[in-house]
Length: 264
Length: 317
Image (cartoon, rainbow over all chains, first blue to last red; front, side):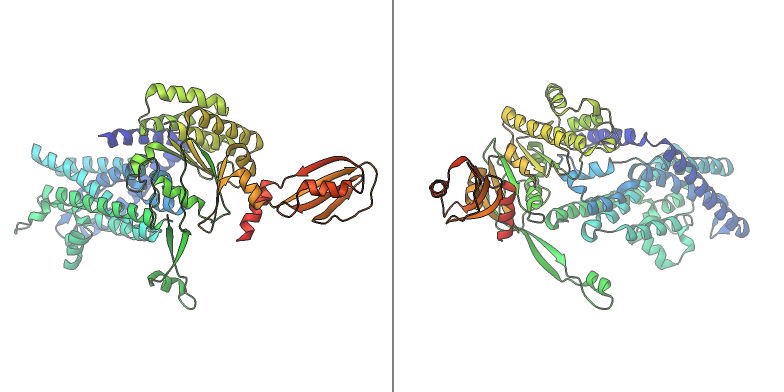
């Protein structure tokens, strides 16, 4: 509770600081919108020509993409700056986080808020509305609830992956390259249904780098794409989020300890 | 206490960078080596040594940022590394080269957030601000973001920030580095006053001799992580500042002459300067032997400057 109050305090200062650079904010939002429009139209062209990818038609794919955009925007707005940890460690500014009586993670996550993620949010919402008018699915209250929960847990899975990636710099000092690869990989695969890839790939994104739980499995459930055999793990997104956050917190704590032991 | 750092060995030859990355070879460097000292409550202690002597590492261990490799540290009854958060509440730390304030927001916003972080009582917060702002001349920068401040203003703001929660101890790591003379004077007066008023124990690392002369009754000198001297500033002068000089002004111009136990430094008009070692000769003996030969009008004993003493200290090792 105390940490949430403090997080609010840190965020307030971050926002006050941001307001000094309004042009930067506008450019950020506009560029994200353009980027997403280009991305979407590329997929559109592909699907228009092929009609379907596996058993997914264009509206299914747009659903998948919008779902991811919603998760990504939440993650981006609140924790896109986790990768700044590298800079903090290299510059020695992380020291300042350790001389205040506040959890260093609260300070890191509270150091910034990224308005440009609002571009993703807008794309996600527009995409979802478009899909809804086209497919006209009729969800009960439970499905809507599940949708909400999965957007949140999808964002949290991505937070956890990046949190782990960022924490690696406690050992390696530089981890941006690894994070960049993970990020590119995530971006690539969130736009396509996982079942069009090979078996090993599906196992990899389910068990090792569980990005399939961000938007693919929730979409499978929500769009009734479940094949004949019952796959219980399709419902595991919230569980995976909790598990991943636990692992991330553990790696982070180890990392902070190591920083104090090894110094910089 | 001891603090060791492991530094990866840089390989030579082909693919050196890649091989270094995967090799487990380290050399161990002792940044702080068997250093031991204690501070009494309410003391201002100068902590000096050349760059890389281990001063900052020691301060980081005292603040709980780094864990000692071996040995023990207690700060007001708390082991900083074991209870970092608790320790953080009772100490204030300022790194002169890096600000801990929020860069883009007006200074007052940084202070508000610190108030929230340290859970400072509203009355205490108001009282401290009302005291610190005029003492440091911060009135005009309260609404200025830190990035627009001069170095002097920034350091003053940082020191006030570190004292908002009334810490028992204050660690200042090179607070006056690069700061102009006027701001330095503000800082000296402020630090001395806070120490007198609140009894804050202060450990101050510096290369600036005026800092030491103005503030510190006791100095700790370290070199290569070792303790070299711990005692009063006067004692240090006596112990390490062996060479003093004597200026003699004669009634009439006198040709250069030598005195046993002293060396003629320079002559200027009726004046001559002699350098002597305090352990070999006393000024009285010198004056007597000169006075026997020529009429003396005036005398002055010149003590070595602390700066040259410290230089001596560093060079000895």
